[in-house]
Amino acid sequence: MFAEYEHVPRNRVDARFIDHKEKKIIAVEMSCPWVDNRTEKDEEKTWKYGPLRWELKQQFPGYSVKQYNIIIDVLGGWSCEVDRSMRELFGPKKGGEILRRMQKAVISSSLSIVRTFKVLS
Image (cartoon, rainbow, N blue to C red; front, side, top):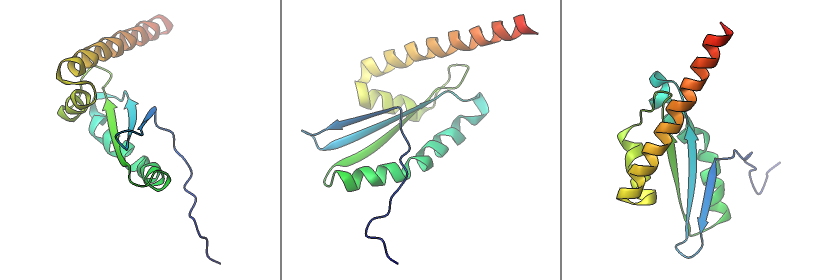
């Protein structure tokens, strides 16, 4: 038995933007792993959403599909690739500012978790 189409179960990225004028699709995946897992998490997200990128290319022929993995570790660190991605998405000045705001949110969230853990211990 042969199938005409292969069904790929959809994974959902955190955000997906479709620009019909420019004929491009941007998939954004965000994550906040432990410091040691930042590189592995980037590779995992790229591999995990490969079928979704393929499915989007099939659904929107002629469109370019690009995935951005925005990964900031629990201590607020990020890679050069994340910095480049944010500046490409939002512009050189705004991309850096958005990253700093995200860093503050991650750090304050991590501190809140640590305080809660100390109270429970």
